[in-house]
Image 1: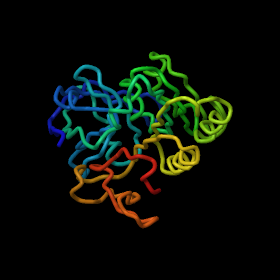
Image 2 (image 1 turned 90 degrees about the vertical axis):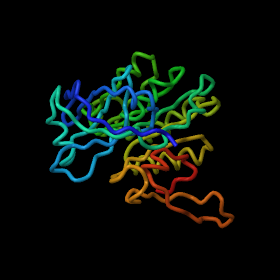
Image 3 (image 1 turned 45 degrees about the vertical axis):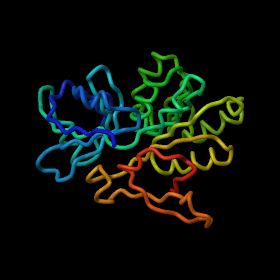
Length: 267
């Protein structure tokens, strides 16, 4: 079992990147050393919020841990008000993370991000041995962020926005699907990693399934305990051990996930 750490940490930075998008940075050598793309931490946002909030790890620089997050509810609104020097309690790293064996030089990484799903994939890009292809969609150009690491490592970046304010005017699944049709990407040895809202992930599962493509998805879900005890974040998955077609079981997103093989997840 992976080691988990709970600690009070001092905020190094909590800056605004765009409307309702923040970058939180703190330092913890134990959590940083045990982290891997796809894993997450839970943060105690304050005494007025009962449950901790889960946040995917979006980058590691030495002992510094980066968290990209959207200000959307009571917990994140409280967290957004925290300043440099304030102390927060963190717990992690939690979850299974992306499979380490697929992040190899021989595999071309293809990332599909929707909205804040870029946060988890940003850390994955940091770990990949070679640059790959990113497909990133959002409602508007104001919600496009976190591309620095992709540009630095010379990734091929493909952007789509719902309103056409940046990149192609379509959703990110259409962007990816069109690329499949026009290019020879299907002839390359590559692995797809996706993170974003469930409707997007459902379409990614359909496209990759129809084209027999290897794909891993990271689910975004409301969580309470973060360790699989409360069963409050279960998701339906195919029972691959059963000989009965269509039989399913439930797995916890926080412990069994948040990363799943696209062939087993049922959305």
